[in-house]
Image (cartoon, rainbow over all chains, first blue to last red; front, side, top):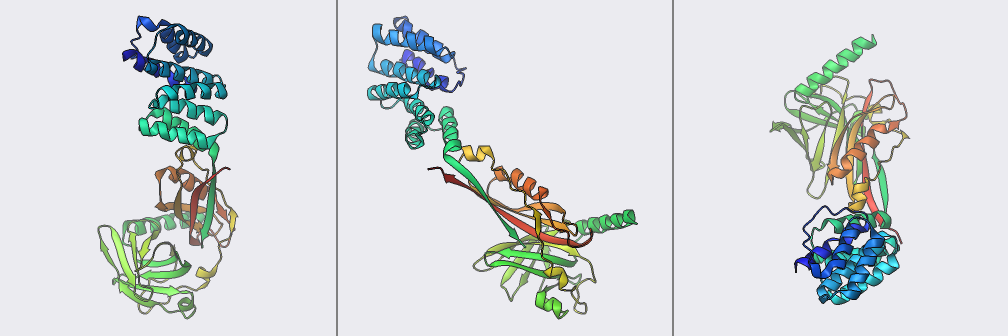
Length: 160
Length: 218
C-alpha cells in the first residue's frame, strides 16, 4: 500500500517540471527498480526514470495497482520529455489497470494538451478533478489549457 | 493667477468633499435604456431639482423629491422617471446607482459652476450638457492572464471626470464583477484621453463600460 502511494507520487509532478517536494515515499525493497525509477522521474532524470521503471515492470513482481502507478509514472516522464504519443499509450495502459487513478488522467490530459487536443485534455482533466477535487496539478493544467484554448476579448462602450 | 485658481478650486473641491453635496451638478445617467445628461441641483433646504436639456433650454429647474442623508448616503427620487438615486457623500464627484421598478443603472456628476439650485434660481446653460465628449485615446485593458487561466469573464463600469483639455481624473469603479478586472480597468481609463473641448477648469462626467469575454478557439 505504502509503495503504491509512493510510486504514484512521482507521476504528474514530473510532467511540467513541477518539482515534487513531498517526500512521503517509503519504497519497499521488492520494487527496487520501480522505486528508483520514480525517484529519477521526480528528480527530472526522465531517461533514467523510464529505463528503471521499464526494467521494474519487466522483472519485479507487482500488483495491478502498482503496475498502474508505474505506468502512470512512465506516462508522466514521456509527457515531460515532449513525447505525448508515448505518454498517452502508457496512461491508457495504466487506466486499464486502475480507472480511479487521478494522476493518470491528469498526466494524459497534459499529453493531450501537448498535442493541441484540448477537448480530450479537458475531458481527462474533469475526470481527474472528480477523483481529486482541488488537486493543484489539475488546476495548473486547466490554466495551461485555458490559455491555449480561450481567446480574450474586451468590448468597450462609452457612456456619454 | 493660475496658482491662485488652482488653489481655490482645490479648496472648493475639498469643502465639497467634506460637506454634503449641496450645489449644481452636471450629470450622466446611464442604464439599460441608454444614457442621459442632465443637471441635478441639490439645495441647502433639502429640495432637489433636475433639469434635462429641454428644461435647461427653458432655464428652469424641475423640483423632485427632497433629499435625505443616512449612513453616509444621500438619496432622492425623480417621480417622473420612477428612479431613486443613491450616492455616497463626502466625495469630490457625486454619483452612485439608481433603481427603478424594473431597471437599475448608474449616475456620475461633476461639479458645475453657477448659482446654487433653489426655487428661484436657474439651471446652467444647456450647452454644458450638449458638448460631446470625443475620445482621442481609447486605451484598452489587458485581459489578465490569471483570468484567462481561470476562465473568468466579467464586466466593469468606471466613471470619471474629464476636464476641458480632455484629461481624465477621479476614476472610480461603479460596477465590478470580479476584483481581477479592477487594475486593468482603472489603468485603461486613466490612460485614455478625450479631445479638448474647453478650458482646464471645465469638467464633464463620463463613464465607460468594459466587458471581458473569452471565446473558445476552434
